[in-house]
Length: 399
Image (cartoon, rainbow, N blue to C red; front, side, top):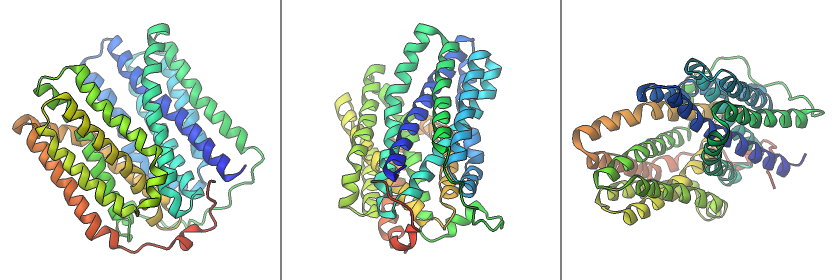
C-alpha cells in the first residue's frame, strides 16, 4: 500500500473512531439520567472519560514506540467495541462506571497511535499540515456523532444505540486486521531496555515549549467551554443564543484546519504559535466587553481560528523535537497534561469565577496566553532542534 493510501486510511479510521466516541459521550450521560442518576453522579461519570487517559497515556506512548502503531490500534478498537457492547447488553449504572473509563482508555490509545503513525510517515516539514488533516477528523465527528446518536436513541433506545456504536470500532479493527495480513513483521525495537522517566523529555531541547503551549491551549479551551455559557447567562442570553456563539468557534476550527496545509507553507511554526497565542489572549481580554450575541459570536469565531491553528502546529513541533524512538511517549505526555487539566481547570477557575466574577478569569487567561506568546517568540523559537535530514530517518511522506 502506498504512503498516500495509508495516510487516507488513517484519516478514515480516525473519523469513524472519533464519531463513535462523540456518540458514546452523548449516550452515556443520557442513559444514566434515564436510569435515575443524579446530576452529581452524571458529572462523576463524565469525569471518568479523562481519568485513565491521564494516568496511562505516557505508558501507552512507550508501548507504541516499542511495538509500533498497528497492534495498539487493533487492540484498542476491539476494546472500545467490547465496552460499548457490554453497556448495551447490561444497561445499568454500575456497568457504565466500569465500561466508561475503559472505553476512554481505548479511545486514547487509538488516538495516540494514529498521531504516532502520521508522525512516522511524514517528513518533519509536512507534519503540521498532516496533523491538521488528522485533527479535522475530530471536527467532522463532532458534527456527525452527537446528532446521529440522538436520533438513534429516540428511535431505537439506549441499549440498541450502544450496540450499533460498538459495530464501528469493531469494523475498524477488522479492516486493520485485514490490511495487516501479509505485511512483513515489524523490525525489533531499538529500545535498550533502560527505563526512561517521561518527564526527562521536558529537559530535551525543543520539547518544553510545545508541551507548555499545548497545556496553555487546553487551559484556554476548558475555560472557554464553561465560562462563555456562564457569562452568556449573566448578560441574559438564551440557551440557543449561547449555543450559537459556541458553534461559531467549532465552525472556525473546522474551516481553518481545511486551509491549514496552505497556511503552514506561508509561515514558520513558531510564527504561527506566537501570533495565535497572542490572538487567543486578545480574544479572552475582549470577551467580557461584548454584551450581545453577534460580538460574542465574532470573538468566538476568531478564537476558534486561533485554537484550530495551534493544536496541529504544536503537535508537529513536539514530534519533531522528541528524541529518536520516543515520539509517541512525548505525545502521551502531552495527552497526560491535557487530560489532567480537563479534570482540574474547570473546577479551579469556576471557583475563582464564583468568588470574583467572570471578568477576572477572562483577564487571567488572557495574561497567561499573552505570556505564552511572548515566550514563544523570545525563547522557545530560538531553541535549536535536529535538522530535517536528521529527522527524516528514511520515513515516507504521504503524497
